[in-house]
Image (tube, rainbow, N blue to C red; front, side, top):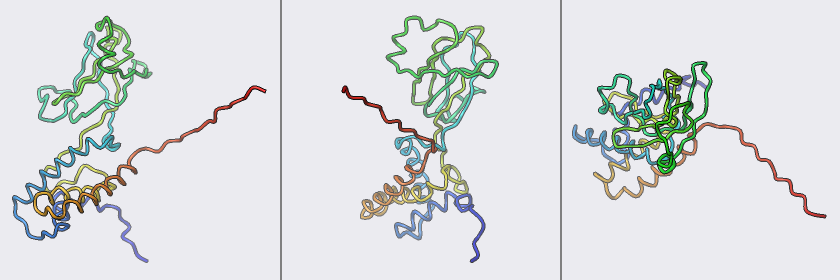
Amino acid sequence: MATSGTTTFESGFYIDDIITEAYERLGRFDYSGNDIKTARRSLNIMFQEWGNRGLHFWEVKNNSITLVQDQTTYTMYRSTADGTSDATAVYGVDDILEAVYRNSSGVDFPLTKINRSAYQGLSNKTQTGVPTQYFVQRFIDKVTITLYLTPGGTEAGNLLNYYYVSRIQDAGAYSNNADVPYRFVPCMVSGLAYYLSQKFNPQLVQQMKLLYEDELNRALEEDGSSSSSFITPKSYYPNV
């Protein structure tokens, strides 16, 4: 039996195809330019809502920042519209997952992530030395990472290497691909159909929502990175 020999469907499935498929699920086969525009807006809103659905592993990225002497706080931006004057800025950052201090020999030293209360309780926040902890603040337009200890002259020029959660990219032009892996294509289309049903076909809202949530849950369950797990039973010796 002949097969295509290709696995490239999602690479040719553009934003306008996603919109067409979603409208067809609502029984709409004739729509205007404004309908396409409002569908793209709904798609972008849905991508932002996915940010509340937990960690998306395909959006986890790695980056390094060069440490500056006596500089405690380093800034990354949520949007490409922010921090445009910063030539070294990292954009699309939603949160910091983990970080290490990397010395000039390339040796990594894990840093402990602490909360605001723990950072506030540190008595001398400007004390210099090899960083051991970091505190993340998430603002509307930026994410900052504050180190303790503050890098001194010996640490300057070394690296803060970190993994961060990047935002899903906007839909953009109708000829673009969506910034999602192939596993999320079904729930992306179902989700857009659900969002559009709220505007154009209210009687289908509940049905579209059930289909969307079911497909999204399956995609989220499959998303991730497999690793080994080891379970060791606890030995118990009763007194005899």
